[in-house]
Length: 86
Image 1 (spheres, rainbow, N blue to C red):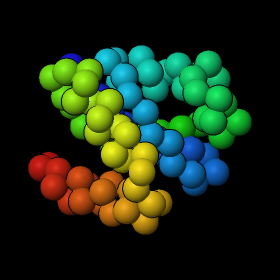
Image 2 (cartoon, rainbow, N blue to C red):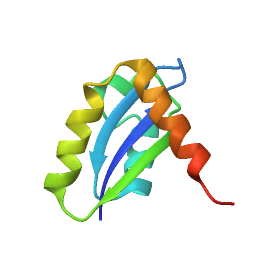
Image 3 (cartoon, one colour):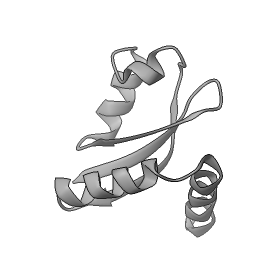
Image 4 (tube, rainbow, N blue to C red):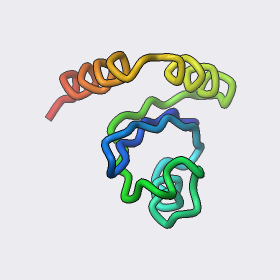
């Protein structure tokens, strides 16, 4: 699977990325070896993710999400949380 994810950084900012291994990518970010943006904002946590069959689908969605405003990203995160089934 291929994933698009949004991280919440320790300073409250959001970071959007793509990976094919979500668990490992989170560990890489939190080890300080991830994206330059997140290195000074540790720890980070995944607050949103979507799964896709192809890398192409995931990277297109990543680009789309990166174009959203912070408010729109927070709305997206909130919508996903409200749809989770316990």
